[in-house]
Length: 196
Length: 196
Image (cartoon, rainbow over all chains, first blue to last red; front, side, top):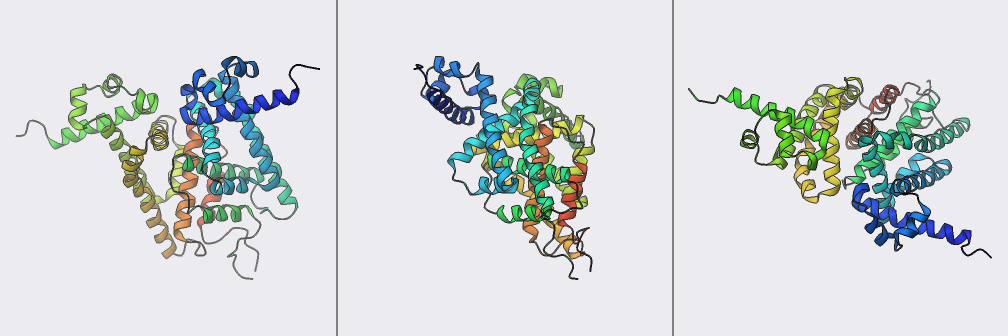
């Protein structure tokens, strides 16, 4: 019998990622020291770096973890739903999620090496969004006068704006009808189309 | 004859703001030390702080300066045009402008006191956007089935996304048709409205 089961390893990895998410969101990448990562995860540096080679690898794993979760929701419910979830969720979870996302944004600005590493990982969300739109188009639900790639980029741009808006702590109560408008924009028919 | 004319004061103030813009964009707010501000402006700390009480006041003046310029373009040409300008301009100017804007975003996230100070200043752009849309609506160019406040928030959200996108150094060559779609979304008629 192995001393450490796969389930145990997975649970430990999850524990590290969850703690690190809070830690990076609160202190930023540079401010998330090994000491703070130990506190946030409740584990020793030895345990943490048994699972992740270094802080950079841990951060990338976390960002990738979030991207996979989002891609999963996108595939099932669409990117607009991801945005609606961001608006409706309680204050704890989205703040952490947003923190990671904003930290990715900041590092993309300031760290060209990180930009290269991240490029491969960020395509998942685009691919999931595009796939979902193609299925919607085949089902006759999507407008067909605008290229699917343009609609994909449009939705991603709005998501980026929403993430930035929420991260700045600006009021968001008025944004539900804005998301309705975004959703309507990619759909086949416009509500106020000229009457036949 | 006064020793220092108003024109000279204005030119000096402009010189400080232009240098500071580059400095804040490059080093961030905390990294823009007095020494670096001296280098970037070509002026002594005495000259700089003769015009601005402290670094915080200088940064706020700069951010407000940018907001006024944007509000001016918005009043004349609309917020979509501001976005198109962002896409088409050379790499020097927008980078600086973006740097200030991103630094505002970052401080809004991390500094509640700054958030309060900034709140009054950020309303200019919203007001200019809203005024422009109201005029467009009166001229029969705007769709009338969606509230002007919703259309204003929609355009601001896309701008926020575009700023974030560009600041991250992500490719933007494909975004022109996305802005066409955004513009069409607030206009009266949709190109592919069902034929009568």
